[in-house]
Length: 303
Image (cartoon, rainbow, N blue to C red; front, side):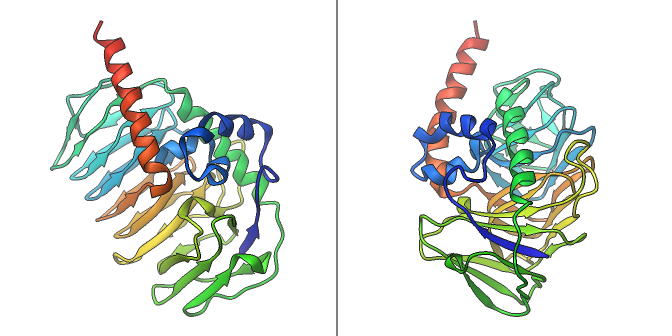
């Protein structure tokens, strides 16, 4: 079941999230969109706290990757145009030189081809707060109700329609979400095995950081039992934030202009020709902030 919830401001945020968001509001032109993300606005990918893996191969991630330790980040034949940041000790496979278990300013070569252009960072408190904020946000937004909407063919949904529910998004479907720059859309997904295999297009000024696909369900303490998400668009473009804190996630042969957050106590898969592009609204400001942060980090570790 999919439910679309129009939200604004801090109405659906926990206090902890609101505090974290206030710290980064000044670096984004999409201030209200950043309010929904907090420190997570710094990441294209977040991997849930667990003793599992985020597996990345044969693709490109344009943005930072945040990993909840002791999860391992494995890479082959792919490029991360950004840094790989861990909440605790770093734990990587496929990078040369091997940075583990600490930090290394990079860059790194990737086994089979490709690179990580930024640093590998251990003990990054922003990763911890970003994951906690997204876990709390998923739980809070998942409590919103809706009415049924069936997605069976190419279809447009208006953000001004209010609260809706729906099912299905196959590879012959184009879902268009139309909304203004001030609108926010949350789609709560409670199906056990949701598959997003079609295009997702935004019109009217609404941006990727204002559209959240929330896989709701499972245990928010153990991070188990949630929906198993698959995205396989055969190279077509999807847009928005995909959040699945308690379920397994797999993205295959797809282009995502947005973010890929979650992963359950299972392996998170980003494989077979994927491209993930951090939304433009935050990428320029965050890139500038990241360069300043990385320069300062390198200076402090060269003494």
